[in-house]
Structures are given as C-alpha cells and as structure tokens.
Image (tube, rainbow, N blue to C red; front, side, top):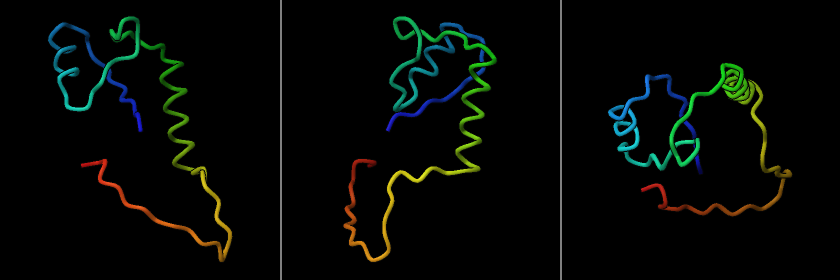
Length: 78
C-alpha cells in the first residue's frame, strides 16, 4: 500500500539524493518525479485528514455477528 511522507527541507542535489536513496522510496510527487513545494493550505488539508482519521476511524469492511470469515497470512512484508 502506498504511503506518503511530507518533508520540510531545503532542496539541493545532496538532499534529493539522500531522500531518494532511502530503501522503499520510489519517487517524488512533481513533474518528472522531481519534488516541488506544496502550498501551506495543501499541507494543512492532508494533516487534517490524518487527524480526522485518527479521531474517527473509517471501517472498510463490515461483519455481521455470526458471519464466518477466513483469515489468511501473507509474507509480502518481509
């Protein structure tokens, strides 16, 4: 599942290569995969969504009492 990390930093070639060399970092949002600054309003909107999700988690799957379910394990996270 993809995830995003917001980073406040001065962009330089060194900082770009430092972040892009981290294991499992696949790229940046922006033209040609180059990071670009976000407006404060965009950052606040994302952070507010995260906070709302913590306060009121959304149930993605609903189960009924007595319903049979199967549980599978996976090693895809190794």
